[in-house]
Every structure is written in C-alpha cells, then in structure tokens.
Image (tube, rainbow, N blue to C red):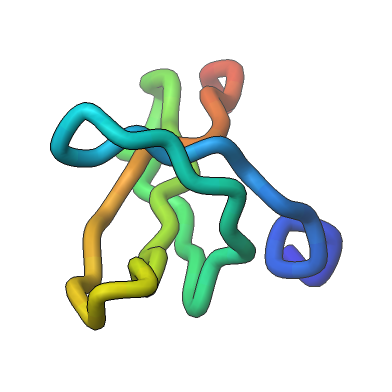
Length: 59
C-alpha cells in the first residue's frame, strides 16, 4: 500500500483536473469478489474527496 500513497494520481473534480498524492488509501474487497482501492485526496481549496484508484482481481 506504500507505493499507492507515494504516487501522484490525476483527480477530476468540478471540471478541473489536479495531480495529487493520496492522503489515505484502503482496500474494499468482499470475499470472492473483485475489489477496489479507494483513496482520499485533499484539494488545494481544502476539500477532501474520495476516488477509486485501482481495481483488484477476485480473491
């Protein structure tokens, strides 16, 4: 998960695009189903948004 937090992602919000590093990231994966990695991003105006940054195969 460390490499996810060190990388910059392109985040679109309100019609604008930002290149940001996530503040926090976690995995949501129900047993036997595909999962996703969700991250929190802090925008320059102070807002915090969530975005799916990666899809995972079923476990």
